Amino acid sequence: MSIIRTYKFRIYPSKSQKEKLERTLGTCRHLYNTALEQRKTAYKRCQVSLNYYDQAKELKDLELKHIHSQVLQDVLKRADRSFQNFFRRIKQGEEKPGYPRYKSYNRYNSFTYPQSGFSLDKNKIKLSKIGNIKAKLHRQIQGTIKTCTITREINNWYVCFSCEVEHTPLPKTNKTIGVDMGLEKFVSLSNGEHISNPRYLRQSETELKHEQRKLSRKKKGSNSRQKQREIVAKLHKKIYNQRNDFLHKESRKLVNAYDLIVFEDLKIKNMVKNTRLSKSISDASWGRFIELTTYKAESAGREVRFVNPKSTSQKCSSCGQIVKKSLSARVHRCTCGLTLDRDTNAAINILRLGTNPGGATA
Image (cartoon, rainbow, N blue to C red):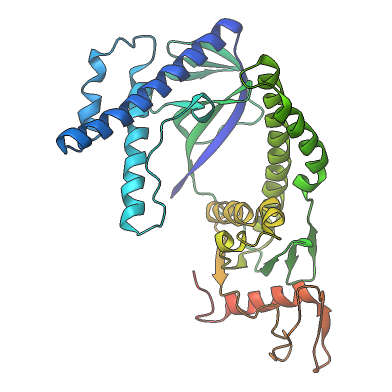
């Protein structure tokens, strides 16, 4: 069994290579927007629905020899996926299916070599039509490289290799754990351990507000506004990197230590509608943490289960009695004599549900 894993590295193009990368990205964006417009017009005027193959036939008539052919084909596949996802959302009855939109300069930041046109040579990436670009390969790439994606993030460039890697299970530990996600504590485990909430957004909030106010005062279209926009973007990126690093490390610790990990089946999209808690929930990134733990567990031969969150915080983990308490009450006290941290009590209930037959929801 194999899985897909992505390796991301910083690349350092020269001035001329940056110009080629920008030109390639700009052409791909223009082609993407043209493909959307062509589909929209064909259906509006002739009631004809175009697909990828209809549009790919016209590529040979375009004077785009400065870009690898498969990169152009991937752009059209990207447009095709946008429409397929749109129709899927309509079929599922979503309230806002989201019709495919044209991409501005800041919203189209990557292009892909899907099969060929790229190669690795020690500390350099060879890209067709662009050249050999220096790269910082800080870790070994495992598996078979399937695609190569070049991404622009603010003023930096990165390469992402999507690789097919063989499934390598970790040794069994014969341990199970229940996980309760929170805001005061990021995670509480059924064994009584806690992981503190780093609150990276809250830590940088004052600086972020200061820089955003400066941005709002800049004249639209000016160079100073563009420079200030980059400062704000870099600050957001710093917060994202801090959070992502934390989530990767903590999810890896869980996967390495336990054979079975049980989470609550939280409806996070509904929870962030609470205006008082939405920022804190987003800053904690529960969904991202669960996602990282799940895919790491899959590759390591571990199991992740989800249980119904109903009453996990109110139910006594010792006698099963329902003990009503508000969100401000951080200690569980039951008439049976059990006094326990509220979140640890919930984690124990989560684990019990996940290990009981029929208790897991997924």
